[in-house]
Length: 223
Ligand code: BEZ
Image (cartoon, rainbow, N blue to C red; front, side, top):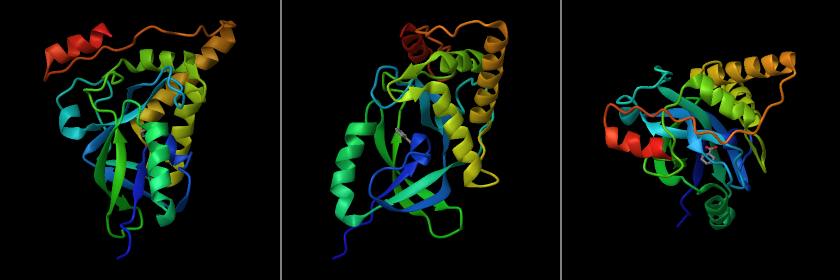
């Protein structure tokens, strides 16, 4: 019997930093989710600061988010892993990505209209301790500008995501990402013009306001 295919969906750094041992890279989208810079990865080896996660769209609709629109299609890429390497890649992904994320499976729709593909996706759910929740976009942009980690500057992650999304399709832009990138560029320009140094920031920027759960919001605000 032929081995089942293993496909991985990337909506963040995986778009421009592919996993090892893939033989196909397919642009496309998933639905039912909203991409947000709501996952905090300070101090973890692979991520430089605030990074993206996917929020269940029905959950997001109950929240108060300053970015109050989100595309129905969350664009990204699906990678097919070479069958002989599936076990190795699954091990690698567990080490590289699992911190604060859980594994889900979701149908992925290739941009060329071919049949949907079942893909593995990593999602930082609201119950994990690195989930931050809605933030004021300007404060989030300031946080991103000042953050960095072993894998680089947080702003480079943001700019990498913006560029790689724009490259996928004429309709793959994400207003949440492009608005943050615009704010970071403006802040950078201001800082350069005034000669102000960019201090590393440890300040929390969460202002999580859930219409669904005040207790959960208070828990998150204490972090
Ligand atoms: C992504 O690029 O899709 C991704 C990478 C690491 C963790 C979660 C998602």
